[in-house]
Length: 130
Image (cartoon, rainbow, N blue to C red; front, side):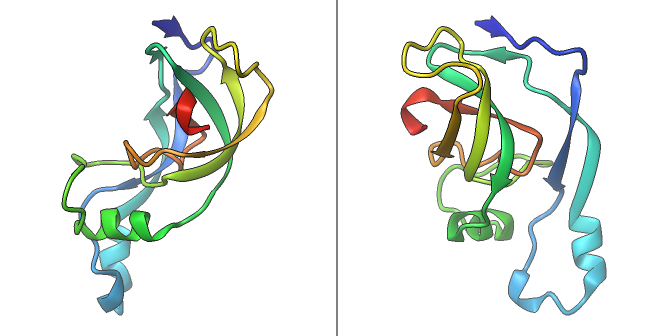
């Protein structure tokens, strides 16, 4: 495991605290109580073999993200709170010994096997998904 080097142990992240009916979202209070911007989310501190730490530059909202936020995913249910976001563009900040990627490389990644994490400052991705 590689330790992620940084002076700060927290990061910004959008967190889902409860499933949301996005189609019946006429009541804004539902979104206010189910979603939050947290500036004290724990930053990833260790990487497993074949994982990369990416500083997120952009994150899309894909159909899979909508399904996850609604709680309609048949598999891979997340425990609360979770950070949505499967598809990102970012810069590798810890290549974790990778021979394919170096720190500073810009990547586009789909984290479909673990469909969370993109709506944060940092996200761990598998090397094969970059």
